Length: 65
Image (cartoon, rainbow, N blue to C red; front, side, top):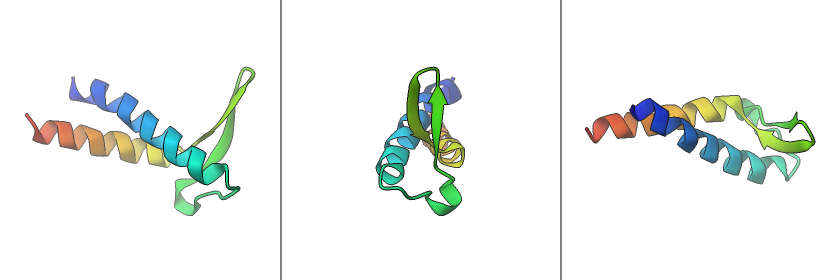
């Protein structure tokens, strides 16, 4: 159950950090930030940052049990 709650937190972290770094024109090095397009919407996204953020949130929630 903690993992289900951690996924949106990882998405929010990835979206905010990718927006700040990607809008400046940087790729973020190991974060691999790229411009994603879904339908008519485009946004900056980073899969490595999403997995790291979701894993961090999941670990913190497991520690609070």
